[in-house]
Image 1 (cartoon, helix red, strand yellow):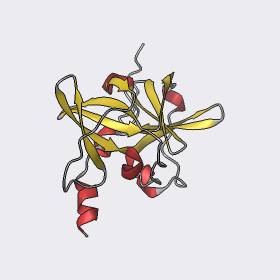
Image 2 (spheres, helix red, strand yellow; image 1 turned 60 degrees about the vertical axis):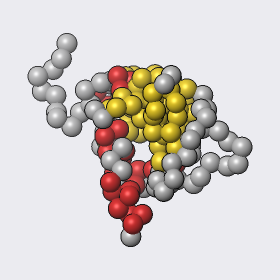
Image 3 (cartoon, rainbow, N blue to C red; image 1 turned 120 degrees about the horizontal axis):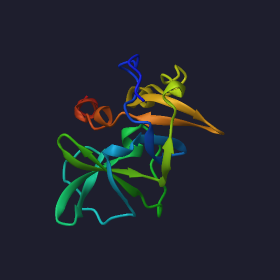
Length: 159
């Protein structure tokens, strides 16, 4: 039963598709995830910012692949380490997030949702809407809209 006292900042969904990027455990609203895929062949995009790793052909649909390590300001993947794809639906279409490892779907209790801690790296903090404290680790809830707002990234590269 829904509570009439929900805050605007609380997440609407309590189920999260999870993935790992450079040791950080992320989740995104499971309703935004179209599918998860193993490594896909990619076509590079000339002159694109480094955060745009390339394009993948998903059953005839061309999908932009975003390198999440680059987007989050984390170290690059080592040679020979392949990424996996979390394909998300947005208002503007489908986008693939390149991640290190795919996790499970986890549930978070609304009352356990917290603001990102001040100690979190500023780049991560700007892309995370909140956290859940799980047994042994934190689930960082990724704000997909903010993550895919690449104007700020492109602006930083132009400087």
